[in-house]
Figure 1 (spheres, rainbow, N blue to C red):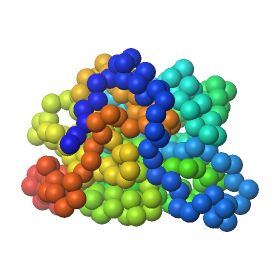
Figure 2: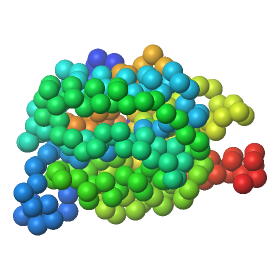
Figure 3: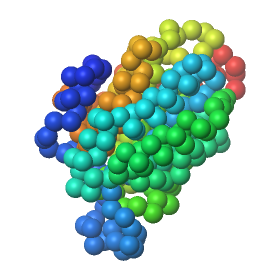
Figure 4: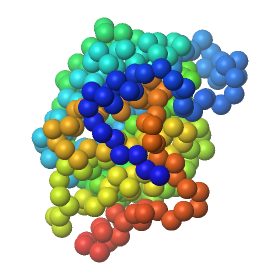
Length: 280
């Protein structure tokens, strides 16, 4: 079963509704967590936002993506979502990625607990210079994200990687292996596949990128995909996804991967396309 998000006010309102919270609990009871992070500030979720800045993203997409995250963090809906958790605060870090060796932290770990801290994080995002990089390594982004949780001075009830991208993995280690390593650590991965351009030979875009993300990238209890197929809905999709993550909510029809089932889109499709076109 796969879930296709319908972006709009109705979904945002639904994300804010009360109900069962689904997410990944940090290993062990709170007393054990305290042993590894003495005197750490408790938060509802440790959220790593991993943003694609590869050359396949045009400058307009990069600008809208960055504005989308900044505006989502200061939105009334996001701030309301903060209040649904027992701690009413989240820890967030934001980094940009492209190739397997190219990741840059834009926002080190910050706690967001209200309008003032949200404004500070949003301003930092917008003030950082826009940059781009070659290749697309989703596996590199996941592998870079995992140690960030160990370095985080805050203790969360859930650990989530929020990863966006407009193409399949074509560099570095295979993505499925990186995903599985994260899941073994109790980390949930959610996806934001960007599908606003028609695939062409000059790009690494593929058909059904949302299915690729569902079957090869995301995972963990409560994991889901919010796909972006309309440029005008870019910012709405980002806001909806962050609200769901912060509130510990999942869509009514979320992705439930079938164990042992063959992916609908091959997880090595990006590597194959690169090899066929450039022979390396």
